Amino acid sequence: MRHRPGTARGGRILTAVGLTLLLFFNLGPLGLVVRQSVTPEAETARWPLSLIPAAWTAENIVSLWSTETLAGHVMLSLLVAAGATLGSLVLGAPAGWAAARWRTAEVVSTRASLLTRILPPIAIAIPLTAILIPAGLYNHPLGLGLVAAHMTIGIPIALLITYTAFRDLPSELEDAALVDGCGPTMTFFRIALPNVRGALASSSILVFLTSWDEFTYAILLQLTNRTMPPLIYYYTEYGQLGAASTLAFMTLVPAVIVIAALQRLLVRGVLAGGLR
Image 1 (cartoon, rainbow, N blue to C red):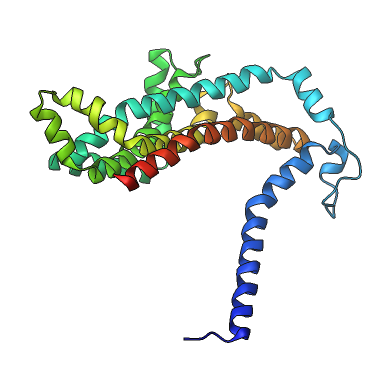
Image 2 (cartoon, rainbow, N blue to C red):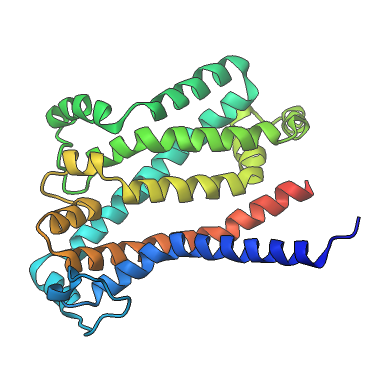
């Protein structure tokens, strides 16, 4: 069936409009954050807002470095996100494998994971605080209590993603390993786990970004030893939009680095799954 020129032209126009809107809603907030971070504080709230600031300044980042221990806040956020990611993979991946291989484990773990995602974080944070305080993990300098809280989010993510990958993995590979004398543990580490690298990379990215951006647990469990999201909130609350935007821009850097580092592993895992 031959398409008329007008129809093809209309399709291209709609595609261009859709892509433009997509770029605007995805890159617009990023551009606004960058603009506010290099704008003098007196101009950040001026209306109407100009896309290009009348003056450029580095006073926001200079002021933050002189008044805040930014390196400590960034390092604490990295430690919490890395710890939550590692802990979630260590517990979530074996649980995902068990769910993919045994029916009882599948029903219990997947439904429990979905149930925990339905609960609002505030409903878990309050009783969790009552546990962390006597354990000495509340407002911990290394954020250990916050790591545990973020793992309640990260483990279901890792479990569900790896469960899908393990379920699609041919069981004949593991059966052959068992016949050759490998036990279940060795089969998991030497056969199953290397074949779901893409799922592990996906889980790592999602859990890391979720922990890195998480706010509710962070503001309730780290009262003074703050990670970056509560710090951004406090500067915004006190009307220092330039400083808050500078902090928000700084949080993008580690996230981009993690995504770039794991993207190659993610692509390799997907291609390996397609060629298997």
